[in-house]
Length: 541
Ligand code: NA7
Image (cartoon, rainbow, N blue to C red; front, side, top):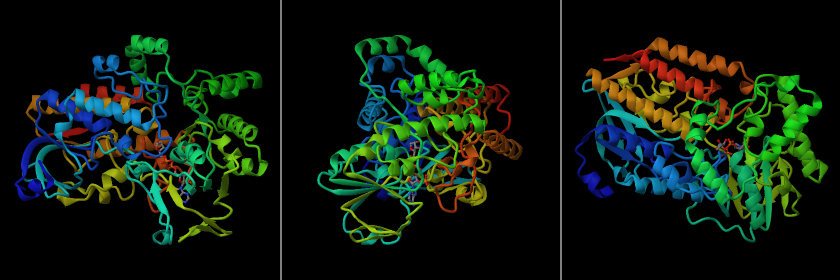
């Protein structure tokens, strides 16, 4: 149906469920709802499926989870017929995969694309959600399922003078679909999180000159991406069920887990041998499949941090540049650890310069570039790799209002309050896939998404079975969950870093650790127990 037709014909449509978002989560939600025979409407603000992989088309954008686990596991046929080209697939390949899934399971027709949801209001009299779109369509639904991603609200910093800039500027999370040719240009990249660390080596190879504006030096671990051989592919396909089952019960949704050993109990030689062996493998395993005390004990963490600092010093030829790149002042792994392909090596290139914003902060953007407290850098293009208003940002922006017309953003003004990261009191029948307070971003997203969608759909089935219409967490359950999420985080080193996990990257955002850090497997078990006990902590009416 065309947008203009929707606007004309705006009598509310009535469905069982509305889904917002057509990424990994939204596609699977539609698949499940259809399987359950629930009528649905679905909206996606982008022009196609893909979510994260629709928007993040910046050079070097890639998954940091291995391809064979960064995928759905709900269909054995899909697992067998789809073949990944390499260990860490790039954005284009993942988008192709999601497009394939959308076509193979005929999910596209469910979605209205290029359609932003502008409001979702719960009507207490009818018990229905009224969902409104930018085109004026209104839908009434019993259930509202948000599948809006955790890192989808792009954050462009408020830097004075940006409107004066005569060149072009970009945010990595809103990259032009036609691509950007930096050939012959003087480019500035602001930000050295995962997006900066993935894009900087690629942009450096194309641009005439690249200036990297770094606020906080980052640890990074080599990805060691490589094509998959036919033998590896055959082996992975033969064992995929076991691999995915291991992911489901692991700490971070990956096919490995912490080693039982503690770093502090190792001899220096044994410690180095293990670190080197894991470093040679590449990927997250170096940190998250390693010694069990790395993220809990500051002394153990310091050993890991020093190992990476040494690696940086070994690679970066200019000692002054190396010293600016060496992370200090926060534990390794407590800001989301990037994986890279020759990130530190890139600073040995003659066309790459590093600006340390702690020494010389950005004062403003001027028509010809970026002015710091020391000098003006002449630039033709600026790339903001400055991240996202994580987890709460995408939800707060929708315009969700619950009982008593209370805005979700108001309820969460001091930080998100949820039960299991899925539901929030005062917003009956609202289900957030990978919401704040869920494990989500602390590991492999598809593993998390499938668990959430399955669990939500089982709850919907339960409601139908018992003849109930409404589900909502109790005040006690929500408060307890919030306290539990905080207590678990406080037992780790995570709260020490100014990370997006803590909301610290967004000026004015409450400092709250957003995800649940108890582990995917533990969370899955807990959710199953809660369901088995008649959905403990929920009021079902
Ligand atoms: P991140 O990880 O939030 O990184 C953003 C980077 O931008 C980080 O280095 C920030 O420095 C920097 N930043 C943010 N605002 C500014 C301003 N105003 N001035 C200078 N520098 C700034 O976002 P990414 O997109 O890289 O990654 C997000 C997630 O996507 C990633 O973790 C994966 O899960 C996938 P800071 O460290 O805050 O000092």
